[in-house]
Image (cartoon, rainbow, N blue to C red; front, side):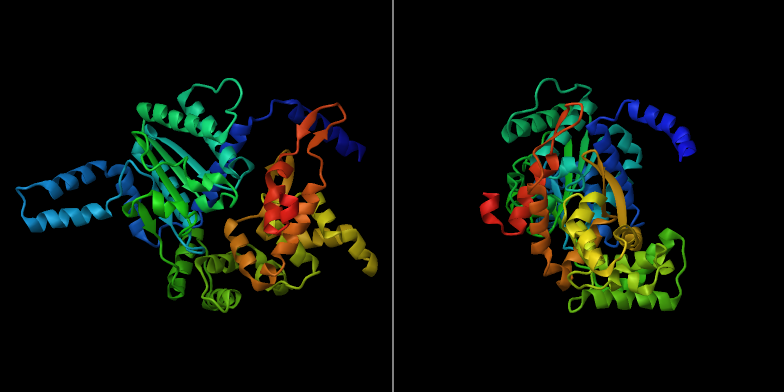
Length: 459
């Protein structure tokens, strides 16, 4: 033990004493990693219409202008003017956000990440300011005010004009700063802003009204956003129909082609019996509804990410879904939590020490055996200066919480998380007297209280 300490103490002390990355740098690194990870799940789009509409939106200002002139040209015959008007209805308007609407399981997140990644490798991308945000995937994008504040910091970096003084005191001041910085950057170079998951903004957040994403954008500013149909409701009322692109629900009849596309991208081979197992498992998981793209992707991942090295019963799609079973409770708590949970928090929420007293099992071994079983589906990330466990892919959460056994316990899990966060102090005082705010409590306790219908506590 002393030898290990002597070898590691020096490098660790040097690493910890060095300058730490700024919050903005950590945020940008997190979203860049998300962009690459989400884009890697598809190699080509199933629906090329979406890609065409996005490219028309980015490069089609001249085409829309020419079509508009044709629709009003009196020298053309009535048939040609009518055709131009019909084409105009399908061309997205450059001065307005382009919204990609898609139902759960249709590959919305992968689609917008794929489009952002594809555009970033084009020749003209070097002349654009490209910004990507996956809303709700990081602490600084988990609500409207934090999202806007982070975007303002990023825009200030691109403008090379650091923000001085205190942050804007109110949401309205922050909104005005955001629009002013967009206008200033747009005067220097074209701006393309990809925003994935407008529906991930909390239900109680007034940012869901989308006042910060106006109908008329500043010159040279393009916004490509995604959401679920009618969520948020403001999408349908704020933006014209020709700027809303709908991705249809996935047709299970196309499962073979989809699996083959994923295989080509992963450069692996599956036997026909394995492909049939993927399809049958997806059908079983989604029953009685039709399986979505998410179900097939989860089952494909299970076939490809070393899960066969575990026992079949340990697969995520085949776990014992009964209240009280540790692996079931652990998975549910992680899926319901916002941003994940630390190992110590999981042990406390599961009350694993008391449960192991009845069977005389070793709580440490039992807990880590459970984490070992779930290892292919969990990832570690840094949240508020701590390492937390969260689901590797966002679509795992959608699938898990759609299963009836999990749905029945969502309210109880939210209640436990609300009580757990509510019991924590608002401020943490370090031994050296340093005071840090408990931002996780401030951000998430009300969310879990509302989800658990704890109306009195939330008010």
